[in-house]
Image (tube, rainbow, N blue to C red):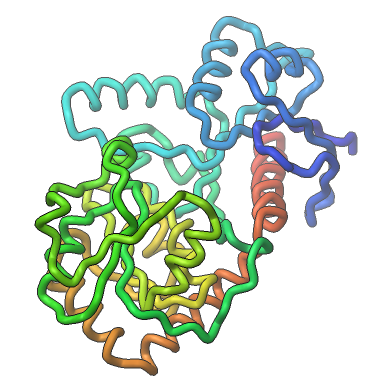
Length: 332
């Protein structure tokens, strides 16, 4: 069997690779659309990590006949496409256009299995998709202090974060809580909900300095007793990278049910709560704050799971396995 050729925008992707199914090949990194087009004639698969502009640029090029490779075009596989539920008329029109363009994407690899929202709004059905767990971004970069208990309830992150429900929940409780000092521009761009002025936060919530560095992120998480990740009900994509980082640092995580969470994690690894329900979130926080054995048991199970997923090399191998399994099924 001839080696396969992949061109990708994944940095550090293995230049030579093989899969347990017996497939092998090479890959080359490309940073731009023009680079991809230049490589098209020698390429079997374009593997695109999350860049919608690049994906749609390649789709347009395929419409214009610029992606010829012998008698066919390279197959287009899109990984970790981040999409939002359309909530306005303009967003519905944009979603309809994206749905049309996505018809020219051959396969999608998602970090979630629960794809009803993606299928309904964008035509990305389970039949056109594969799913794999993500990884903790801190894996292989830091050895966690597994014995550090922490002192506050931490809420952090940006994508579709529901800080309002977190404030409503911890405002009912006597325990110390904290958030990194908010970057409101970034929160808006990630469709988070944070409507309270900083001078009207619950009295038990303190603001933490955050310079955006990895070292500071680790310190903020390690100083937490438990981590809360509230997601808005409108989410059709609950990426769990923040959850996995907290789990890798041996923290008990409370997170909103939804894609990427309910379908990829279990109730012994994290505590799941319904979206936008301050009462349920407050009850969950109270339960794990006061029950040391429960909190530590969930933290230990979460840590073991995050550890088992490996880091970037292991994720790349899972993506390769899924890509080649799909490619060879499609080719008969």
